[in-house]
Amino acid sequence: MKNQKYAYGRTILYADDKAEVILIEWPPGARSAAHDHGTSHGMIRVLEGVVYCDNFSKKAKQFTSHLVGRKGDILFETPDIIHIMGNNSETERALAVHIYTPPLTMKIYADSELKRV
Ligand SMILES: [Fe+2]
Image (cartoon, rainbow, N blue to C red; front, side):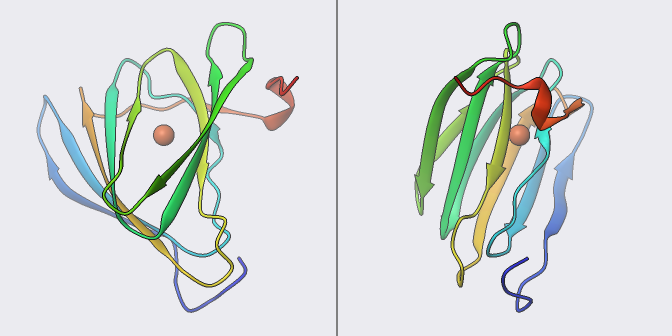
């Protein structure tokens, strides 16, 4: 972590058997493990700061896109992707609300399983 002013935070705002809404605080330099989203479709609305998503196809584990989301942007997560999400800022946190339906189940992947070229 590049800045200890902020800490990774994950707060479940709502959950039932159909959907889950999670507020995630991404401190400067934070990065998720590579993961999929099970059978869930997800939508991320950036509330503050800038986040990035490096997406890979789940089937081939091949890099497909690098997306950047700024305040107000909406990014989508589909069941056919693996991604790494993070905040590249050295000073500013990012805050995003994540909505998943059905509720999120994840599988974690080692970076070495993913192909960038
Ligand atoms: Fe994700």
